[in-house]
Amino acid sequence: MIRFDSVTKTYPGQSRPALNDIGVEILRGEFVFLVGASGSGKSSFLRLILKEEKPSKGKIHVLGQDLGSISSRKVPYFRRHLGVVFQDFRLLPNKNVYENVAFTLRVIGKSRGFIQSAVPETLKLVGLDGKGKRMPHELSGGEQQRVAIARAIVNKPQILLADEPTGNLDPVTSAGIMTLLERINAGGTTVVMATHEAGIVDEMQRRVIELSAGDIVRDERSAGYGAALREPGDDETAEPIVAAEPMTSAAPKVNAEVMREAPPLYVEPEERDEVTDAAAAITAAATASVPITRADGDDADAEGAGRTGTKKTATAASPHLTLAERLGLRAPGGPREGDDDQEVGPTK
Ligand SMILES: Nc1ncnc2c1ncn2[C@@H]1O[C@H](COP(=O)(O)OP(=O)(O)OP(=O)(O)O)[C@@H](O)[C@H]1O
Image 1 (cartoon, protein in one colour):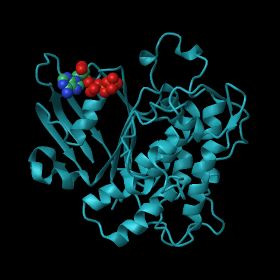
Image 2: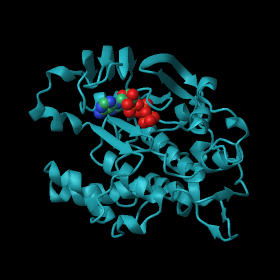
Image 3: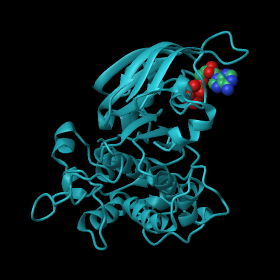
Image 4: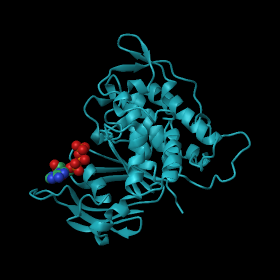
């Protein structure tokens, strides 16, 4: 799905390469964390996949295509298969939520009918049902990131690239975003996420590719953040994202067994679709169920805690449920007809 063959990237005017003779393959459906110190090459890695940058040496294949052979004219078509999410959301400030998500579809010439069904469905999937008319500044940080994710997945990309998607969010809101990315991945979309969040990586135990000064120094199937990357005293900090209860209560630990058991979430929605209704409800519940106490003692919902720099503490943990239970994936009556159809990230 994504293959780097001896890829070196040296930016103009730099003596040291940002990526140095990288060879790696990411398979369809994987969830991969890219970790490494600041400047180790994570964003460069993602930009190369997007063909925003060209390798100085080596070859990159994405979705079976040699990126070196895609002409500039065809790059926008290639990018339709990729969704991208950034740390700073990058929403259009003068457009409402609906228009932010519809915008790309309009640009690529999707029909009005397609847009009118795809946008509300996607907003529902990310837990923003009914918020289409809000302007970005009227949303919490977590909600803004959900809009950005909706925009990234509305055209059903096969690959979702996320560069520090939780970097501006507090731990509980981050957990809600990770639950959403997990579900998108469970629907078949390959996810590659660059992050500094040790807690998230430790909690999710997915494939970890660690970069150090442009070299891959670790590539493990199911791993944590890595001792070498932790700042001194990290383990003792007051608000570690994985510190068991807050992270666990907002986004239950997802292990391979749970993921295997979970049927694809992104079935084609119907007018009243139990699975998508449950998904939207649980998306909200994944964060909102954890009461947050503001420094001044008021309760606030978890999404409201998403604004950068807001100091909040998660309290009471909800009873432990499996991910499948929390996502409403164990619908009465077993698997639904059509569950093989994935709305996001076709793997066919
Ligand atoms: N456009 C550019 N021009 C010149 N040098 C660049 C450019 N972009 C990145 N670099 C350099 O390439 C190296 C890798 O940067 P990159 O942004 O890929 O690292 P990163 O791991 O994503 O860092 P961070 O975690 O801080 O985002 C750094 O030394 C950086 O200064």
